[in-house]
Picture 1 (cartoon, rainbow, N blue to C red):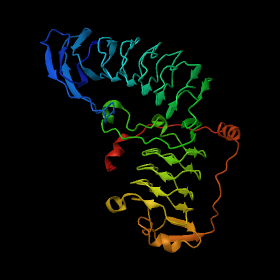
Picture 2 (picture 1 turned 180 degrees about the horizontal axis):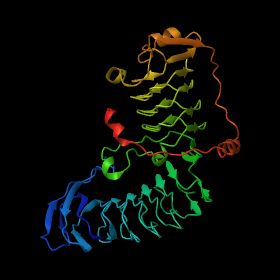
Picture 3 (picture 1 turned 135 degrees about the vertical axis):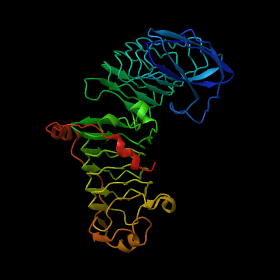
Picture 4 (picture 1 turned 90 degrees about the vertical axis):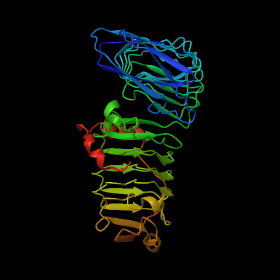
Length: 409
């Protein structure tokens, strides 16, 4: 494979595979040969697969890097100012992560084994993936694509293609688990078989999540200082401006880290179809003053409400207290920094004694029995919600990442 880079002080490349790889850094220095780390089938994180190799440059002109290796299965070359990338001879490649570069073309026609492709934030005008039939995950956001044909990619599970110039997207013969596209643009979408698809959109700072089934679990990126993305939530760039979240009926879980650091969040609507709230789901939602946990919720994950310091009312509609997951190990973290002396826990009539003796709930000083009827989740028609939200207008702010140091991930 070859990579052409613009003048750069240093470069990082991550490789995985079997055998060896010889790297010619393209600046006249001696080539280097490395023994590759095998590709781990159980670890498909684009941040963790393989070993990193670095090189410092003193030249001020562009360089072409050559990498020779017959069994390279994973290549990570993101954020390196690449202007070209040729992987046509690397037919064993399963993971390619080349995001945040300056690529205008990417030929993957020979890479039939490719399963994971991350090429967001380049300058791609075309992306042909019809021959990559094993592709499971594709993130091509923030390019200049006018067309994206994934009709042959029947193994595709996760697709991210927002912030392009697409006007039509057909995923009718694919059973997707998640999809991110340009909701705010005039785009025609055919979802076909993806009846369990979880979709989302933001209308004037309100995040609306729709679909059927489990919300994906998201992750924390410990290398955020280098990637500028702290969490994998698709709405991460909006987290400081989201003031309300509406989860529509049909969603059965709230994923790990789903709304972490949504510091402007003041309102959350959870339907009676949600069965559990994931780990770290509402960490640092410091402007959330009340939350209703519907009757359907059976369990709440580790640190779910950590640092929700202004919570004044929690309405738990379930007569049997939801299980606090892994209470023994993380008892101090689920509601840590919630003032349990002043926050009122509202529970169904006849269930106060159960909450007073339940792990994680007994810590609340003020538990009140209210008349709470187990009702089905109801909303206005979706178009009416949109009409109302479009009348609102708020501004987003810069996220202060330094505050993450206090969160025990």
